[in-house]
Image 1 (cartoon, one colour):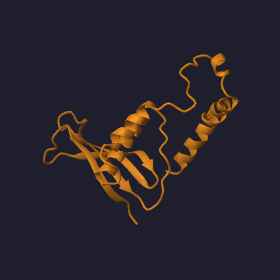
Image 2 (cartoon, one colour):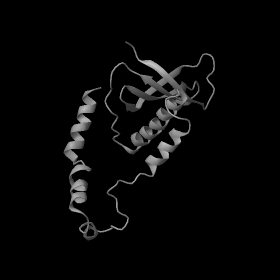
Image 3 (spheres, helix red, strand yellow):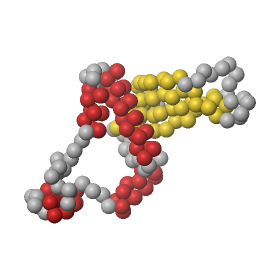
Image 4 (cartoon, helix red, strand yellow):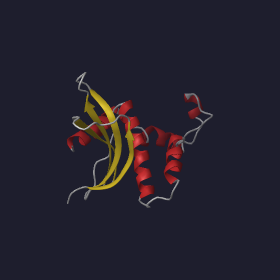
Length: 163
């Protein structure tokens, strides 16, 4: 079975496309969840005078696939921002499909941007302050919540290999 286009969101027209213009599309997977894929598609035209590409339109498209897909793991600040934007548009697509209550996309995005882990302590700004806490919380912080560089590299290699 082929992927199904579930939702097209935010068609932003930055510049008109004239009849006869060469149109180039660039698509990037920016967010995934289970069997859903959020893509950002940019449309560019080739300027006849300068022979350079100029951005004309940007679209966010949600696809449903017949199988689960690997998670997106951003590698740079730019990719992380694209990921967050893609996640927001994915939540908006769920709202527009009636799968998420109206207004909940904004609520979830705001909650994520103000998230503080349960182990976070506003009074602890030094290593000595942390020592006063429950040893269980310290173990959780040290072992479970932070991946070392080797684990991060392993996840990235697995994700690249899946493409």
